[in-house]
Image (cartoon, rainbow, N blue to C red; front, top):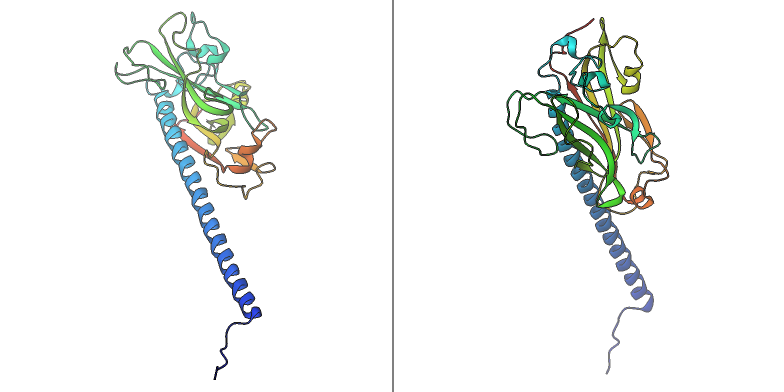
Length: 287
């Protein structure tokens, strides 16, 4: 006699298949989400590392700009002032192209505001070391001039970099300035500079253009630099609506402009960075 054998019904098989598919979909979603979080954190970490390296390097250079000055020389209209905001900082007899003066809102940017340019100078204490472009310092009588600015990436015309161009002068014309310099940081979208000044007991920060508009130039106690940069890592569509997002860079709220790559907007992490550098001999001073 053949006994009845029980098995799975069609409905049971369908339910089991559906449950298995649901669990598989959940597992895949969890994996994709974890992978995306990992790539996001990696993108942020890489960008933070590059930004910190660049800003730390610039900060060390800016701190040198007044190492050989007394407090009263920390103003833009005094010859050899460390922060160069006018031709007077170079003294008479020196040919000064406009490109070699700090300026507000004159450079490339992928934001609604143009980037600033920072120009500093310093007299080396010893004839060793290198300028920001890698040139050897061989004299203690020739001033080193360094220009920090944003330009188009020479390897990718759709991106911008923060660069430095360096040169020298002792008397007469500059030497070594006027090129595209070397890249300090890639994937930069905006560069901002503020000057810290003190009038009596009041300290405040102002843009380069606002400082130049002052009838009486106050000593510069600090320089703040800020950049907006994006990650090079692409990790999927961004949770942040970068097309409409506002980013705070020092005192400025900026948005991405229409020239910024739509692919970068959609697939990269954007982050602002800032650093404030106290200038030598400026601490505690006042008018």
